[in-house]
Image (cartoon, rainbow, N blue to C red; front, side, top):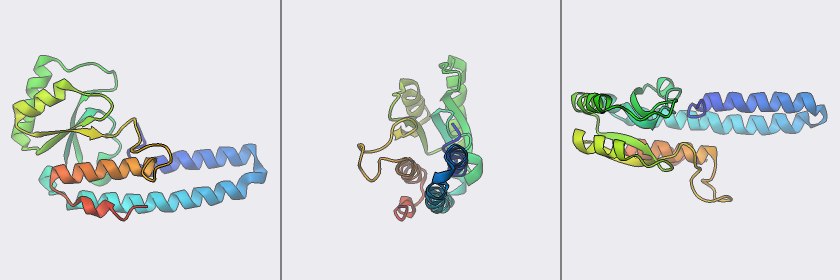
Length: 181
């Protein structure tokens, strides 16, 4: 899950460009042009994400998510991942881990926790209720927003949707993502 950090997704594009150029040197100009256009969009996305995160009160820049897919996102933008309900090994948390998360959420006064639109989590919903925090189950980690052909049905659309959701729930300004193409 490197992709939640747009600069790492740009590295994917760079690798694809270089590999395609190596295999098809005649297409190098097209691959470079497409990469440059993508790079400009990723850099604009990166700036919008940082501005949006900066609009979130510092004490609210904490993420408890369903899956540990934000480990590469958080350090880039000054957020802290305080936990994931389903870590990389896809195990469910123990009763003790759930109790510890509830205590941690109460102590840190986290306003919201986040689940996935693809994988409903009754555990995360219950943790939110018991900790007295809002549970948002619409972060996108495996499913693009909209339908194929829609403007928002893209990686960038996914990131805009996620940051808009996070900013709204954590007290930031989601409108800062509106300028992202």
